[in-house]
Length: 459
Ligand code: IFM
Image (cartoon, rainbow, N blue to C red; front, side):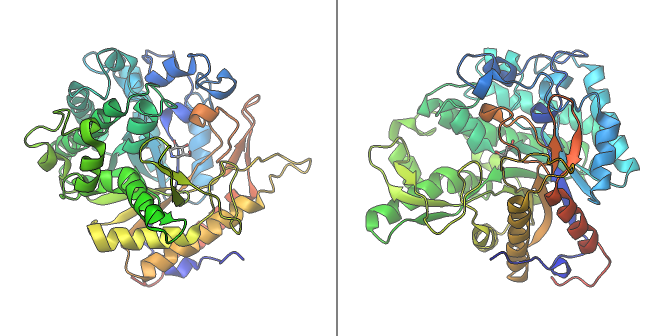
């Protein structure tokens, strides 16, 4: 049974938003001076993306900016999380600036502010300029310094109007899925390289925090991690140890250095020659840079991992197993709202972030527009209801939660899954680009409008 969230549980000054990312919605991949990204290349590599789909057009957001901004405002939200496409503003990753690219984001920011929607800008949501991949990509250190320069450019250009910056989105995905499992761009399968990439992504974050603060001292800056509670499938010591490894692999490897603890030693030992330490990747001063104080921790949470020991499986030798009593989304991800409460409370207790912002949460289901012009996505509506109820519990329990962004504003390019997996509050017909607000979107809008009513804070 779904629990209903109580809008009164959330403080009046709360970021209520929807989220997207550049490559997933913009399209206009070769227009107005945008350079190629690693996702353009990856999509054209046979066998990498379902049905060989790509982001050339996506939601055509680049050409529909004004009407999409109206759509965002119509949802009653006060915040919008988007990402800047690095190759749109610096086509070769560094050096020559593309004024048309900067202008697009400048118009977006102005359009949001004119609609009383606060921009939350993500600097890196996986579309690395191909030119930087050609010189080694994230496994090489120089990419982190190029990122710092790019971050300073964005802060100089937009920092007079943007107050919230997310440096890197989901470094685990970029590092491991991109370089270890090879299922995301750039598609390499090399565990050692994935740990070099992870270190440089964290270093890039730390350097970007410094760069942004030096330009916009009052900016709120954070990083977004994809986190999931890791639960052993049984009480057997092997499963308990596997759950701990999985927790280290996904969560602690990023949280520990960001919060000043260095890399988790149990994992460093298990990784052996694949660790960044053994490869000589971690240089003096890096851990201090990575641990720069931030204003919030961005958390992308979709599910939880119920884990079994799997000695024959690749690192971290753990397998996620299905629970017969649980519901699953179209991605096969368990619907586990209680896990959002547990996760945020744990973050608060163990890492003491200045604030926690849920920068993504949502679900994919096979939607369709029915003849009455509606998308009856009851399962997604229930998903949002139960997760917001769980977040309210966490806030009541002491987690300093200050924002929530539904993933996603609209159906979009879901990476290696192409356009098959729909996460939107708004349905997109990719043939006609017609947008249709789903039932879940109507519910979210009504909830946000209620939650934003002036009231006494319960925190
Ligand atoms: O679509 C992605 C997004 O780009 C990053 N977080 C997870 C989402 C759903 O898979």
